[in-house]
Image 1 (cartoon, rainbow, N blue to C red):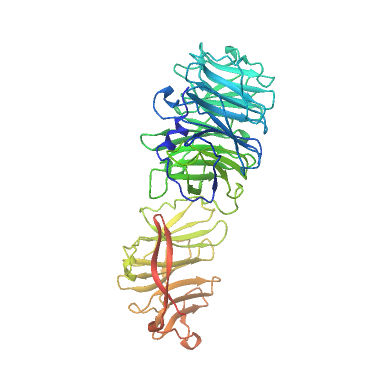
Image 2: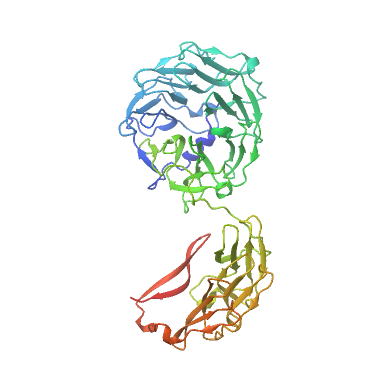
Length: 571
């Protein structure tokens, strides 16, 4: 009944923001009128792209979106290199619901003449140069509101509008729209009180078509729109997108709180479950959502509320929304449509100034990469806010990690905070974790951990309370840790940098220079006895006065990259 605010308001709040993007390439279709906003995109193939634009405003009044008669369509037949633009006589003022094309010459557009003629469907067969009103889709000019038109081929089509006379107004055609026939109400579940649809809020997979409503319901037909079922999404309102294999997302954006909720279906909309892993915990407005054909990818464009971190973002998920990858921080892109993993387009909403841009997806093919998805695991430490200091992988199943509290400043000993040195270990690939406390000291600093199996590991670190550098070993999966005292680090002058084992017996530990030589120990019996390497076997380090450049070791932490300890490189 009204335009889909979920795909509209978010853009108009931030219309002029734009940065360089490596994911989307801007195209100016060259309209003679400035500041038109994209209302719909239809992709025929890699070369043939259609889009509809108009002027509109944003208010809570249904007819507040009508401004003037400037309803225009642009078309490219060479993949966006050149564009041809045409006027569509929808009315004055004109509102565009959606555009649907089947080839480079044939397309349909539906919308509303706010001047009194009401809902209308138009067709072109000459690439948009002329448009003919298909009057047999007899929407009542005073009581109807058209939401979409769709064609499966040059003959078979459907158009849908809000309820009139107690039933959703649905028309079908089998002759390209020359004759439209309204579907009997007994084929459509009755609407609930106050229920209506949103313009362009529909999706099609094969002979199945869905449309959503302002009551959080989704209507579904498996026979080209000849009969319908209705299902509850579990949300009170919202938007949706459907993909291959009956996968779909229904979402609801709360504009007042800048937050979004989503639900997922795997059976075509009959049953829905909460999607709990949403980018940025759902603190955004949704601009567009599309399932990519021929891929498991789901593309989501959002509006963030932070000018510092970037307003407009493009995300992708390859595992039904369990994990999301940030593809781009760029421009305000909506109406996203893909026809394959490499070919996608989006449109810019109405801008206060500048061209009425369309955006071509120019990122890599949207196929699940082998190593680009990260899954979060909570090792279940009893204390919050521990930071990871080191990880060692024994196999696909056995992983060890060590965590501690630390601060970041320019003092070497400023990283010591308290005695919380803890180790986590999994032997089932992260499904379950066992954690333990290591009595490194108070305050404790962690250098690294090395492990050779699910039970045996060594940990190097420093007791900032005076105990100096230490090496600990466990042989029972971390339940207990034994201090290996024969690595005779001086508690005042030594600083251990790492420990490593090649086998249960053979290992090495290294520290900064002491008495003119790097402090290196080796063991051949698992660390029961450590022996310092003779200085004659270690090259002499340069004195500090010869240092000419400094490098920094960096850690990735939630708020960025920071140096945790200065090291030196000699030229």
